[in-house]
Image (cartoon, rainbow, N blue to C red; front, side, top):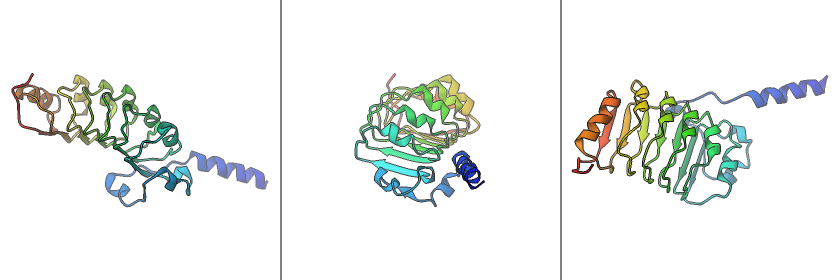
Length: 198
């Protein structure tokens, strides 16, 4: 009988996930600042994690252990591509992959349907994938200092939720800015000064 109870308890604990929190509630929880620091706790209890400066081997495999992760910062890791395992962390609310060497964002980003804040600044991105349309909870998008000059028309599906897009240090002409504002009429854009560029 004791064995049965133990098995049931183990199964129940493996099915439980942390309740999704907003950014204010998340900020009250412990932020783990290295993978070494997480080794002292069960991976399911890691809700916030920031990894900076140091390149990490098998990063995707390491991150896939944290099933309840809701806030993740991967800053200045010299990433040239986003590890695909990140897109299985479906409880992510805040994702920051800034200051890397990314040229593209995989279509799989559309799987992160709970994202409210996404920071992709200071990379080399040329475009936004059409699967952004699935990020229905996205409120804040930071893409400043990239090379993006237009969005896919599908992003207009976020016009009711996406409140702020930071596009500073992305130079574009007034016509392109108007096109973006037509796609997202309720969104506040932060642009750099207009240029006479294409």
